Length: 347
Ligand code: 5CA
Ligand code: ZN
Image (cartoon, rainbow, N blue to C red; front, side, top):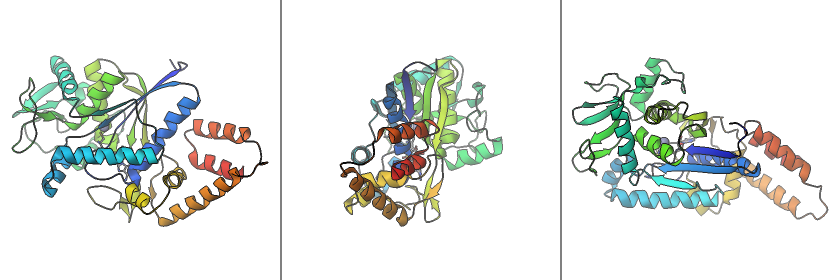
C-alpha cells in the first residue's frame, strides 16, 4: 500500500463570503508543498477540494449586505482562485461546490439512513456520530471540550430532541428566505460536514493518503465528516494521515472573517507586493506552527527574495544539485520549509 505511486489528498476549501486572508493562504501553501513534493517524487496525485458555496455565514453576509448569495459566492471564489494562482498554489484536479454536490450529498445521506444512522428532530435530519466506533480518534478530545468547540463552530449541542448532544445536522429543512432543494427528506439544504464527506467519497473513496485543512477544522468538522465517511462507505480508515496547518493570528486573535482582523492577500498585492514574496514569508513558518503576522515578516521575505534573485544572475555560482537534494530531504521530513529556505540562503 505504502509503495504505490499514486497519492490522494482532500483539502477543505473556503467558504466564499470574504477575500482570501493570510491565514487561508498559509493553509493552502502548506498543502501545496505536499502536492509539489509528491509530484517531484514522480507520483500521480489526485487532489480534491470543495468550496462551501452555501452555508449559514455566507447567507448571513449576503443578507447583511443586500447581495445575492450566489453572486457573492461566485465573486469571492473567483478572487480566491486568482490569489491562489498568484501564490503559485497548484489547483486541485477536482474543485467542487457544495451546491453542485447536492445530489451526491443526498446519495450519502440515503446510505447513512439505510444503515439506521440518521434520525429526525422536527424536520431536520441528524447523523448519530457514535455509530462510528472511531468517532473521537482524530481530535482525541474529552467530551466537554468537544461540546464547547461544537457550540463555537457551527454546532447545536443545546438543541432538545437529539439522541446525543454531539449528533450533527446532515439535512436542514427549508427556512424562510433561504435557498432549498428537493430531497427524499423534504426540501432543505445540506449540513456542513456531509458536504465534505460526500465530495471526498465520490472523487477519492476511502483509504486516501491525506485529509487536510487548518487546525480549527479538527473538531468538529473533520471528526464528524470522517465519521460520516466511515459509515457511508462502510470502510475504515477514511484517511491514513489527518494533517492540520497552524493558525495565523493578527492583533492577538486568530485571523478570521467573522472577527474581521484580516490581512488580505489581495490588498497586499494591490499595494504592489509580489505574491512570491508573500509565499516566502509564509514558508518561513513551519506548517504546524501557530504564529502572529507582523509587518516585519514581509520585509524579511523581501530581502531574502532580492538576495536569491541576485544570486541567480551570477553566471559562475555554485552548482545547485546538492541544495536541491537537501530541500527534498527537508520537505520529506515533515515539511521543514523554514530549514529549506535557510539551505537556499546558505547556497
Ligand atoms: N469551507 C470550510 C471548510 S469545508 C471552511 O472552513 N472555510 S474557511 O473559509 O473558513 O476556511 C478555509 C481554510 O482556511 C480552512 O482550512 C481553515 O482551517 C483555514 N483557515 C481559516 N482561518 C485561518 C487562519 N487564521 N490561519 C490559518 N488557516 C486558516
Ligand atoms: Zn470541509
